[in-house]
Length: 122
Image 1 (cartoon, helix red, strand yellow):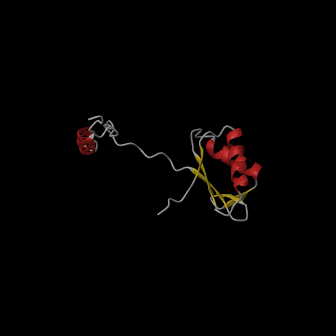
Image 2: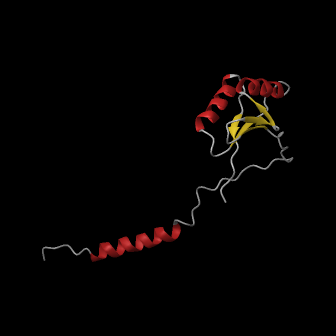
């Protein structure tokens, strides 16, 4: 007989495969237990919302602003609270470059918390 019989090796491998398939879902290494806090976390103040309409005009609380006036108004609003966040709510038809221009203008003038306001997908 000059050939090796591999059938027992295949049987052992299949048994090992079944064992690993059964035990793998039982181990859950991705679970993280977060610490609990003694008091509830307080909600931060609502952010300043800059709305950019389809026509490209920027508004805060219904008042239209050009870029320089917009920056001056945001600085006035954040002067009392430097950690106040600012979000940009742009219409989906607005040019992406215009949104980035306003974000860049805010970042260059030391307004650190700038973000985008989005509608979650359903």
